[in-house]
Structure formats: structure tokens, C-alpha cells
Length: 254
Image (cartoon, rainbow, N blue to C red):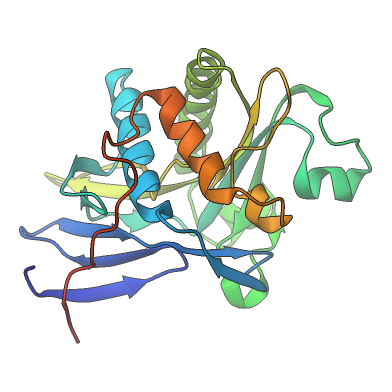
């Protein structure tokens, strides 16, 4: 395995220097966290599954014209991506009441919302990613008004498409969290979908039984966490034929 210089390590992924300028290698870990890292653990094979699921969903979104940082999958745990300037926001789309929305507003979990709701959270682990509004975002310069307009337009397209895609395989897209970045090419800037789209940042319920197939199984100690992720991959038709097998990470240069 080639030695690469590590640039960043987050809760679920590691970023390495890419083979060409303007590229990065994104490595998916099995580490799992919840409640702003208050709960930590390991979900065996999660990195392999999230790599495949995110690849599939990014490619399907690119097919309908959604720009992303994704270039191609390199192996079982790594992707080649474009280097972007991450906008320090977590954009959350809610279609059904669950999680913190139910807690904050006293809405019974599973209640379908009158319309999809977009929320913003400032990406700052030390502050536990506080919820913010558009006034905060533009006043503090995290994103310009035009940037935010692009983010909202892309987010609504992503939600519409993924809702239909998952419904087609018997899964309800309850809510999800995505991130965006600024991609600079030929002296032009555009907003693109970044990070990942996987059961780590989506609430995915069986559309008939309501069974959870996402990280809530880890958050709530429901058991069969790996099986939930595997079922999502299986329904999307992308579970590796040999099943989930491990792949050692690249050697790192400090």
C-alpha cells in the first residue's frame, strides 16, 4: 500500500493527499460516534459499506446534474475526491419527525411533516454543532447569500431524488445531513455536494414496518447495527458479492 500524507482525521473518515493536485483520498473508517461524540464504538464493516453506498448515491445524483466532489472509488474503503473548501455547515433535511426534532418540538416520532424542512448547524465540535439560522450564516460570513441559495436549491433536488430512489426499494428517507464545499476550477467557483451520503448521516426506515436501518441502531442500542447497513446496501443492489470484508488502511506519513 502506498504511503500517503494524512491531512485530516474526522469521526468516520480520514483524508489523505491525493495522487494529483486538487485531489484527496477519502478513507472510510469503522468508527462510530453519536450524541456529539459522547458515545463511541465500532461497527464492523461500516467503512466498506458506506464507501459503496456513498459511491452509488453520489453517482446517481451526478446523473441528474447534481455537482459533487466524487471522482471514483479506489478500493473497498477509499474514494478519490476533489479537494474543496468545506462550508462550515451541516445541512439537515427533515421529511418525517424523528431524533432531535421530536425532542425539541414535542412531535411524535414518525409523524410526516407538512413539508420538508431544512435546518442548519454550525460545524464546530467544541460547541457541539449548534443550530443556526440564515442570519447567522450570512452575518458571520460562513456563506454568502448566493452560496446559500445554491445550497438550498441543491438540497431540495437531492431530497426529491433520494426520496424517490429509496422509496423504490422499500425505504423511507426520514431525514439526512449533508455538507457542501466550494470547488475552484479555471478561476470559477461552484457549490458542490461533499462528504458522504450513507446510513451514517441518513435516517432510513423500512417503508412498511418502520424498522430502522441506519446509525440509530447504534445510537439507541437496538442491536444488529451491521445488519441494518447491510440491508440498505442489499436493497440498493450494491452489497459486495463476497460480503463485507475488511481492507487495511494505507500506511500514513506524519
